[in-house]
View (cartoon, one colour):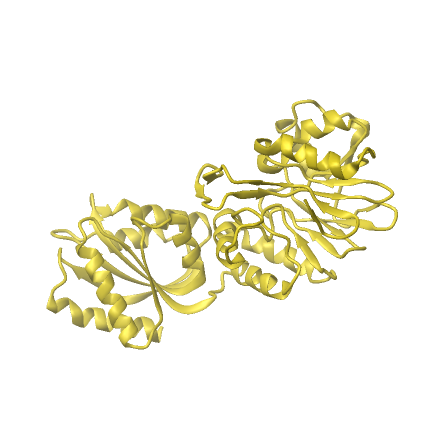
Length: 386
């Protein structure tokens, strides 16, 4: 357990056993399921945890309560990694009033095993408050960040923003890794489609005196909050973080990898910083996050079944799902007899807004040849100038 203040406690759990979060995202450093307990004249529990850690979490809650009643359970977000222990806590504390948004109450039957008595239900809307004695909690609606029922909560005494899934990250609370990288991968892949809604929430948060951000995943944020908020502003406004050029390559037999290495050399010789990722081997969701980090991207892929090699196809479809936009893209395709990769890649990206394509599309016929260097140089120059 961790103390946020003399009267606010982190009672959540770290899950070191999980390998895939939401059955798709690799989490080599596990996952944190955060929950917070406020002790005041009225005791309030902020969210529950995934059922994978119910017993450990209950023990933490009871240790902090130390025999006192639980007056309120606030449910900010109903996704199962946070609502999985609602029944367990209410079985122990049937006296608790349950606070959630009106939208959450329409969804609650999907997530509760035992119906919550009508007299124990409190529905809150934007700006509603809860007086605990020495502090007041204010509820702020955050629809589609990243579910429609989400609220966040502000504690005016300790200046804590309980941020639901906002400002979360992959990894346990004690994972020794930079916040930026795993928070970016988490945000882009899970919340990234809803940039407009996140921008709206950031505007509301700007009016609050926030000293601690307590998310439902990852560590407490207590220092340099401007850094984290600035990153969220960039991510949710689809603004690149860096001038570094990203090269993504999908090669079948290795010839296209040679082309990607050469393109990297050409760009670096022209003074550019370049990141190269082989998406047949690297984490697809990390590649998606890097597409949001960088403003200029070179897609290099083989033609395949009159389309594009599936690893690249999967990446591009994932980008379109996440509202990818406002980027500059160059393309190199490889096709031994009927090159189709570039046309297919562009077709997949058609739903994306504000994508600028740089000419020429360079076509390689199986292996890199001397004649290919000049058009690659031209493409590099045009990409730099774009």
